[in-house]
Length: 315
Image (cartoon, rainbow, N blue to C red; front, side):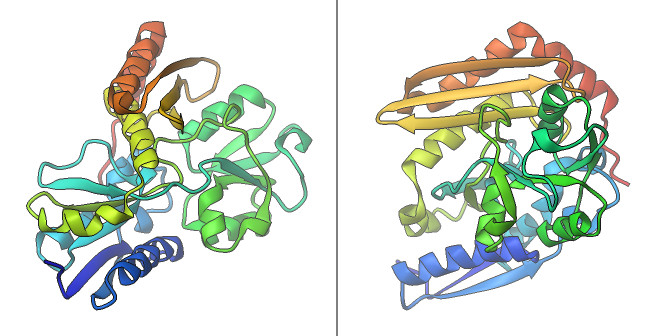
């Protein structure tokens, strides 16, 4: 039975609202008689802007308030950027739906330079991600990489104010907010391997809300779901979080899925890479195989070192 009313929990940032409104519009098309409202919430991840996520609790800071709204009945579902969703979800919740992925690549944004290679030695590049930072340092050790927090508009404003020569952002977010004109070029996947789930949207519900599964099923993209399962399997097996320079990217061609991943030291001086190819139904096992390959190469030592030195500070 189709409910007459649903409420979507969302962060209040402009990009998060675009994502929630996208799901809202899709639901309106599928179920014209349904009322779909948005519940806008501020999260700890949005409020703490003076410290890196790896120091204050990681990706979970972006989802907890939304999960609380699901628990207390203020909302029926929550929409997230999939790369911001922790791979280890609390027992009461499930990732019910993964929508078609947009451009998964990272984007180079600068007011004065066309490419990373054009930046002079010592130029400051801003990024919010240890994953991006490690890959940048490996390729451009002469550049100065500095933290960049805040929502998309805030990050662009910091660039425009002259605090950075360039910044690296997710291409999908810029496109969704009609800011694709700010992109000077898109980094090849081989040069900046994306985060698990980058470019895709995920819908979270309470496990007990099985009534929503059939309603949300038409929003699901099977190819993106297979890729996300493989990527998140890598991240889960390696304890992936904001504290780990880890990347995982899968692509489907026909019935074949290719998953590649890396683990690096934050300074980019050591990077381990692995890849596996198999059939789409094997997505999770392929991800686990890649994770094991990385561990055996030496990633386990990197992960242990980061776990010892990057204990989150929740104060």
